[in-house]
Length: 489
Image (cartoon, rainbow, N blue to C red; front, top):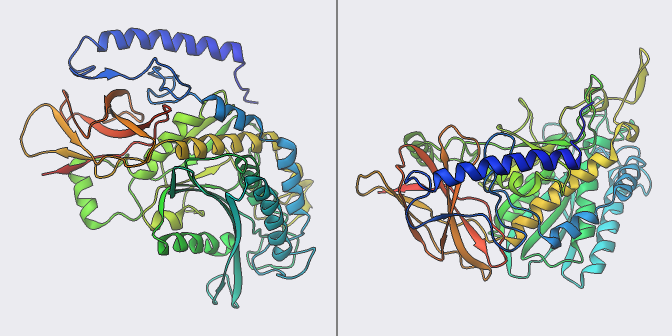
C-alpha cells in the first residue's frame, strides 16, 4: 500500500531540494541565459502566495505558490463526515438514472435533484445574499440513450465575485447514475463513486465557500444526464456561451471516490488530472500557427493543469496531482468536454486507478466477488482530500487576476533575444506581471522573472530554444494561470 511521506521525511526531502535549487539559482544568476539583465527571479518575499524557488526532479515547479492563511483556514473546514453523509444520502434514492422518476419523493433522479437543491439553498442562506441557487432545466428531445423527451435539470449555486464578478470559475459533479445497462432506469444504481463522490465535492465546496468573498464568481454545479451523453454539462456550457460569460476555468469531478485499484493496491494521496494539450476548439488558423511555432503542450487547459499543480499539490491538501496529458481516459469522456468544445479551459479530476467492478455494474455477488457502485467501496477521507485540491485550485484562481490577453512574441526583426507584449489586465487587483519560460522538452516552467507593471518585456534568450509565457500578479501576491504567446509579425 502506498503511504504518504511523513511530515518530517517530506520536510527533509524538500530541504534538500531547496538547497540544491539555491545552488542552481546562484549559478544561473551569473549567466545571461539564466536570468536576463533587468529581471530577477521571483522567490523570497512577504505574503503567503509567493512562488516557490524549488526546481528539478522531486521538487515543486518554480511557479508553485504556498497557500496563504485564508486558504489554509478554508481547507481546514472541509469535513470528511459531511462528505460521507452526502454520498450515502444520494445512494439512498435507489437509482438516479436520468430516465428514472422525476416526481417520486423518495426514489429516482427527481428526489435526488430536490435534495441537492435543498442542501445548496441551505448553504446559500449563510452567504448574505451573495450565493444564489437555481434549477436549470430543459427538455431533451429523443436522442441516443434518450428514447423519449426527458427533462434534464442541473442544480447550480453561483457565488458572486466581489472584484471581478464577470469572470467565472466552474466546478461540477454529475448526480445521475446508471446500472450495467445504460438504458435500465428501474434497477438499483447506487452510483456512490460514479458520481455521488463528485457531487459531494461540489456540495462541500458550496458549504465552505458560501461564507467567503471570492474576487471572481464561483459556479458550483451538480449536473444531470452525464451517463446518457453529457447533456446537463452541455446545457450549462451553452447557457454560459449565450450569456457571453468569461469562463476562465472549469473543473469536473467524476469518479473521485476510491483510492483502491481493482487489484487491491491503494494510492490514497494521488488524484489524476486529465488535461488536453491541443485545444478541442482549435481553428484551422490556430492549428497552422501551432504547427509553425510549437505549443502542443501549451493549450489553455494544459496551463490550467499546471496552475492546479502550482497551488494544490502540497502538504496543505495532502495530495499529489498527477497530470495526465490527454483530454480524458482512453476513448472516454466527461462533463468538461462541452466546455472544451466552446473554447474554454477545462480539466477532469479522477481517482488514481479505477475499479471497474464498482462502476457501471448491477449490484450483485458473483463468484464470491461483490459488484456494484456501493458506498462501502468508497474512501471518504480520500474524497475530502480531493475536495481540498478543488478548493485550493478554485479559490486560488478566483483570488488571482485573470490570465493576460493577447500575449505576443514580436517577430518583426530577427535576433537572439525575445520581446513579449500583452494587454494590461484591467481588474482592480492586478498589480504586475511575471514572464516564465522553460526548455521545449520540460513539462513545467523552470524560470520566472518579475517584470513589474509593464506590458512589454525583452528576455535575453532565443525564442527558437525555449517556450515563454506571461502571468499576472495580484496586490496580495496571488498569481494567475500562465498565458501562452502567439507570434506577432
